[in-house]
Image 1: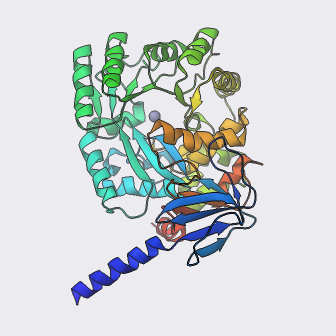
Image 2: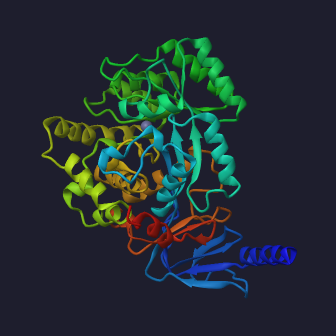
Image 3: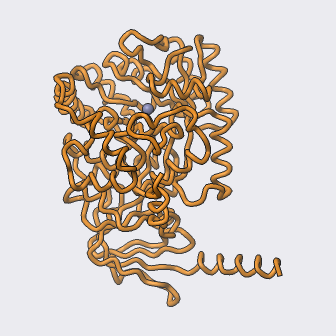
Length: 452
Ligand SMILES: [Zn+2]
């Protein structure tokens, strides 16, 4: 009897996978620089996009099911290249929800479900997760252990002893021993070689003295990291916030620049380094932004209130909605100056949110905030969507992700309104598909809304 059940379920699965589906009538945002297709159609089979075009132009097998998406907009699922997964919890209020003890595979999976709920198919944690358990998580996730969730990618981090993550995150990384602490070039090279032996595709470094309170990685050490990493075809992500540090890491050949200078104007020297090296750039602005809840933005509020406990939302408002300080206003002026200049110089923007450090910039929600920030600071919604889809796919070597093109994995978001008209329409999510299968968002919501 057991055998029969097994055979039946395998054949049912095979049928479900081979039955093609035609989605038609929607506006299609491809996610790279290709033009939008109005009244489009795409055929999905075995979890992959087989063909994309205008409605009526796609040869469709007779057994195909059809899904009418007239009036909707479809964009590729997003890819978040920078979070700090695992430490945040959502049972206590506001910033009190943060504890090293939260770090567990189940909590990581919860964060990944939150990213997926909001349309993010791949989520990369950078510099704050321990190597062995992260590799194990990836293995288990590939084996189906955590159910439907955003896929975890993992980047280890390196810093001088007692350097690296900010004060909050450091509480966690000390307990999990996540950061590779290195003092010399030789130690740095050895650490990178051990990462390469695990086939890790990238490494993060912190080059930041946190206004004189932290030891800063020396040029000797970061040059060694970058040289050794490139020797192993690994990508180097460099956290640098101060203008001089950003120049130093870009000059040294870091592939990804993390953060935007927020306390002074970028100068011609940095911009010319950007023009020369064209690094990928993760601004992760949201972490230091006021919560959108403070503006009572109806497009944002339900987004947060839907998935987070009311006391949590109230705590975010209480902690981040006071009058904007002079320092905050200065930062706004610096971002307004620096962001467009960095983009014009050729910095290749990729979505990253720093979710997992602060309640107001949390998993899934922060992705929509960050891309809206890009637009508010001067790029078009189409460019913002590229930064959230095909460009991170390119950076992370995800050849089958990031755009609505034939051959790609059928990971997409169905929206009720057009984000090219207003980027905040990216939040009007009706459905999220992963590998051609609709994600059961209501079931996720039911878990999060259960009284605790
Ligand atoms: Zn970060």
